[in-house]
Length: 367
Image (cartoon, rainbow, N blue to C red; front, side, top):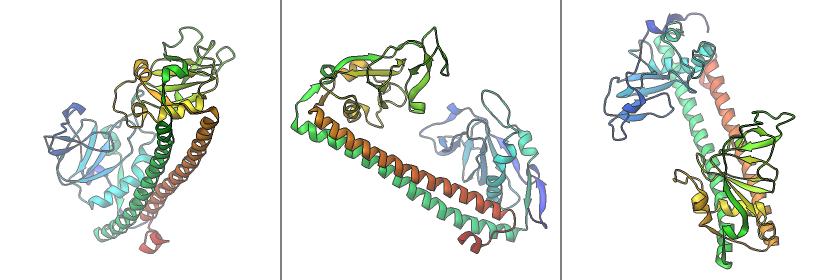
């Protein structure tokens, strides 16, 4: 920070409190915002705070975030509320957005769940100029961040549009076939349809070893469901796995030996009837497996009730090649969009750095 500023403890220029309720205090029909440690507030029927306040998660993955709220609300017992602020509230918001996370990065407590203590707030210092300069900085930052947020919204919309376009074309391929071909029960095109079992009791390792080389697969998108490694496979032929809990319907073609465990369903196709990759695309088109399915759990009997169109092997390859290419293009586009979002976040950091080092002007932001 530049010279000519006042520096005071945060607790000297504001009041720092926590909420008093647990998470169950929320009510979907509530009248007031109820802030927990999540990004978005819930609702409650009580209010304890009002006016221009800063809200900071006190534990969990969002520690380091700073939110600004002007209104009536209540808060979770692990959520910190800064109110009765004696300097420009928006200035303090941007100042803490700039430095709060970094200053407290190595000052968190707990092993299973990280959390902050009131001492983190008592030790935190704020350097600020006179009120007129605070207003000027806030005005520039508000305009700059509004433009950045608008750009972010457009990029996020582009990401969703890219995903929807791919899903639409994927489903359209199968729907067109459904009009021209009779539907074949999934049980007729698969050698086996089975649910994953328990984790191996013997020969289990979280990482690959000389003895444990066979992947253990559970549900979910993280690492494509990789859970660990074992010695002996249970599935040896190319198969499709489908998440039965959590990210329901997440499908993966696996052309290597593996062991499926709980929350996973495995479909092994008959070689002479359906290609594994085509079976995966056909499964993805089923209503029960589409993104956003509201069922709590997928079961083998559920999948067995469905049927799919089964064209010639040549046509199956044509469809899967087309969809694979489209998926690659979609992922590439989404990757580029995400890089743009990362660049915008870096731009925010750069602007905040200028703001609190005395380099911020409307001209510098525009540049």
